[in-house]
Image 1 (cartoon, rainbow, N blue to C red):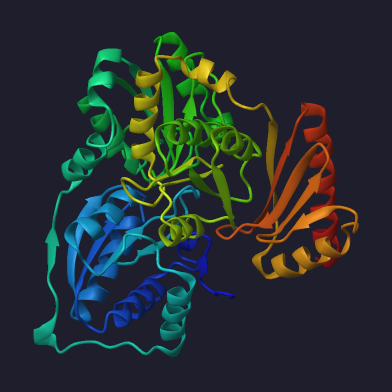
Image 2: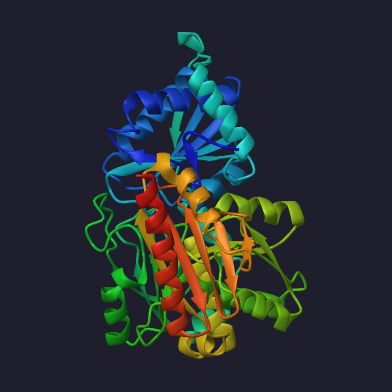
Length: 455
């Protein structure tokens, strides 16, 4: 189902382009109309420079629609999701563009179950927006806004789900690089309350993300790596702008893509729980299947996007999910990706196994991954995708759940248009580095040729 404004993860755009005061006002009014002028909404924001004005605009529209609003301040996305269920409210809104660069901002809309609204509801919001079918209340029936701090309640729930005694006895040291984002207000404090010595990097809130940018890719985390090694820390963790993702590094300073951490979580979970199912997008490593086979478990695939993982977990009563971008979904806490939960659970795993991070990684199946992206205007994405499909030989196994995933004897490639940016993403995995590079070269050429032909 084609959506005009919602992408893989909410609504995002450049401030002053798509994201204008008028757009935010109308979109917020459309969301409020979904609730038929009654109920309570919680709202939080990341620290982007544009977030305060956007958040105030959203709040104004909700109040004019008769809704009660609880303002949580600058907090991670998963804390807003926690608040929705904790307070039993009707909706949550996060003002954030997650890992996008500072000129972007947007909205994530959380349903009353703590998970982002499904595609059907997204389409309904867009329909109300386009038709301007807004409903406002009389001046004397406007809602009111209340500020609330739920950080400790959120931290307390995470602490209850890990082995605090083991973690405290381990006397670990951890480097936390929150990238000047919303994770700064949660993860360092959470780990300290677990008895972990914490060294922070880029730990001040700054909506320009001056430290290393808002996306925690391994190539941007050299400072975190260096400090981990110099300070003899047990591991390191980095967040994106709204802290729903976590990228980890070992005690030697090696930074890993999310593929490694989600497989570590999968292996630990299946070793300790009877529910041995794992939900993950088609972009994830084949290692998730290897571990599931080893543990007598099962992998359930979804399209790329946290909403698909969350909804599949809820529908099938599955307690663990993961994404290659560093998203951990721990259903015992909440069935959404949560960077702080991931950090605490990694400390738990190291404490319980009494092994180093690097030793745990060495025990995992070995594959080589490569990820790349190419710019492509949003208006061309569908035609480019159709063009790519026509060039694929019939002898190659193809999975078209999300973009196209081509399966070869020694590896695979996934080519998909981003749902949040004007780019194509290319994921490659193979059993050797040489083969990985070969497949990536072919895939990049395939996308480039299609874009060139249609431009």
